[in-house]
Length: 333
Image: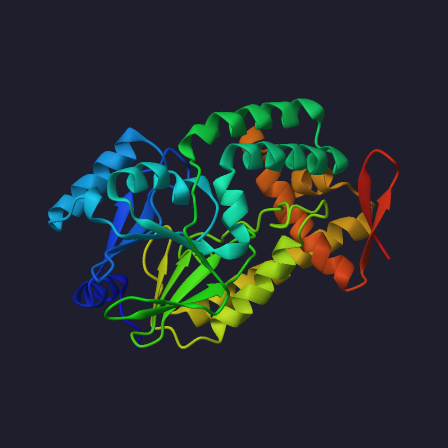
């Protein structure tokens, strides 16, 4: 019998692990930061760069008799702004070390420049997949306005996949599990069977495997859903009892949750195949056939979702891309 989310939080608290849900201005709601009472005093993820987030984080630390100045190590699970936004301010106050997967360090340090390149990349992908130019312009505006919630993160402890972070009372193994983002990193406490997973798994919503530039800055886009499914299967094989996610409740049945996620990707893949088999369509036309006219802010999310599944179909040899010079259409082989 797996434990309830409440029992998971109680058990973790006994091990000096406390979930601090910090507000965000985003649709996903609060982001879970995790305080680990150990030496060094460790915080996993930070919340977005806003006064409200900082106030709430400060208040929750104060409730445990700490201030932000007491933090000694900040561990980052991935590159998204709701997870890294307060890094600069926290480091300024505390002098804490910052640990993150080493392959993402350069990108994290050059946040603004990187965000600009990521936006340009997204616009190219959207235009290439039939999304109208006015939508891409609007989306770029939204993305730029979000940028202030982020921050430059200077990684002082770059981690290799498989490397351990040694605290006084526990060890956390670094596991690079890209998919939702190229830098997704899990931290595994094998002794307590506790896994910190960022946005790799979320209990009540599926994580969007967003199309993105590879961490090495090369031009080819990542096959994010293909990568993500591979990462989920690795996680499914782990003997975790409690999985602490970046949003929502602790997950106490990750094997079943991953089974349901894999099944839903399988269903969506077949639905998309059915649409392509009827007639060749662009990514945008596929997204509209499934979701209708979505809000501008959702255009890139839904396109990422579609292309993730056409990647699976292409890899199976069932679909191919036909490029007419301006847009790509998918057709059944």
